[in-house]
Length: 348
Image (cartoon, rainbow, N blue to C red; front, side, top):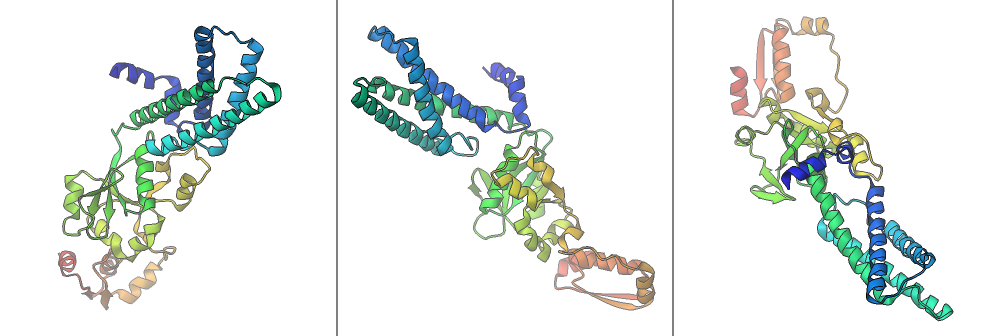
């Protein structure tokens, strides 16, 4: 069975989906084929059980009416969209509503035809059978699509293990998008929370790590985590000094482009994978402004031989200023910061 599934996934039609998630029209087409197959099944059943053979023209007309009704209800309800993202329960509810409404509409057409022409479109029992069979087969279809998609996205070789900052809806959405991306670069292994009381818990299958500066480096090393990813909503937090810990401990920071977040959550689908919108963060990215280009000869003239006081000397920006001032030949550099241990480290 395993060999058969792997060969199936290697077929061209499945490999095409490694570039893009299953198009919506394919789900809609499969749903309509299921409805058509269920109608044909009722015709065959009537032929063998009741020994009634309908004219081909009547079969085509009835099939067209059934397909049109189911197509319109399915299209208007959008039950063929978001098959991968929605849970089985949500899919179950959406399909159930499509079947119920379509069955009621066909019942109404049947009653109207019986009242006007004296003969129904089809047997009422057949309408119920079509609905029941369609419901079962559509659920099986969606379960198969979810399973195949999970198999295609389960490969983790060569992907960087990352934490996603935050436990909000946008953070969980980002983690799910990265995990489900076919051929992606990053594999989320958890969410990093700055709130107390969320350690050792899970959100949507992702382990929640509570930020603890005394243990964070050890966690990254023990769990083989390569980087921290954050979205645009966390930029202010990172710029306020939260990023200092990760920069000092040589933990790479990755940022999600704000435009990409809109493209991924909007109605318009993008051909690019979400990984292409993630970039490595530099110190300059956290300034909140364009970097200032210094006139080095002029700065050197002012600093050389002077006593320089540097406040916030242990931060990511302050420590860089210390290095720059030392290169300019200051006679004495006085460092001022409230962090004792980083102060000791910088003195070494």
